[in-house]
Image: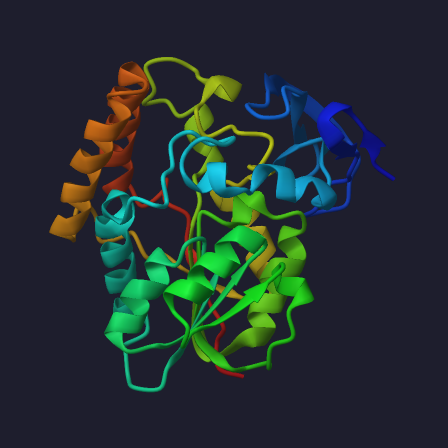
Length: 310
């Protein structure tokens, strides 16, 4: 049972999603941008998973994933999904990586989970994939349905949507897994939906960056990626590999080939620099340096996953 708070937000206590333990230690606390609730960020003593506890309930999602969120006025001020150029270079680079792992052929199916306003679907559709999308936000789903009437878009999370098993060549989830209420069910469902040889391609920040030796300061929960209203889980390589093992997925080290394989990503980074400089210049500077470092360091980027042939 959740407990109600002001402004209709509701919190719930949870156990560790990876190992089921209730034994944690406190990393720190952080105040939410929208709810103004002070959240606890904890780490499991048994498996090392970092997560928010207590957290907002599923019923509170509509209060945070609204139109303001997609315009950069929500719990994460560093996104603006209405500005396609903001993410366009990264999306092109991402899809190029996908095609290097799963060579494209006509009639391949791609499912984009957490499709947002459809910016990745636009690129995948242009490549030639048969595209599907899922999002929990009614606003986002309606927006994409109007934008791409020929693409099937489902409202809800992955566990609520009826989809055929072994039907997708590629499942994408850009900056999604940290938002999930149940990552374990997500990874297991992806393993059921992928065809043999299919790939789960995703992005999320590596929580090792909270205390990476390269950092000029130990940021901890002051790290800008800690947005506890929506970012509920923070993964490192060890915990993500544990999820893959339990889901029956095989890891792929997609970033081992090093720095800046796509010029479009370079242009995208300068686009971000220009926009963020108007908000938090020092955060932008450090964030850009970390991004440059991470692109050349295969240990900091988390692996993707493949469903091996039966």
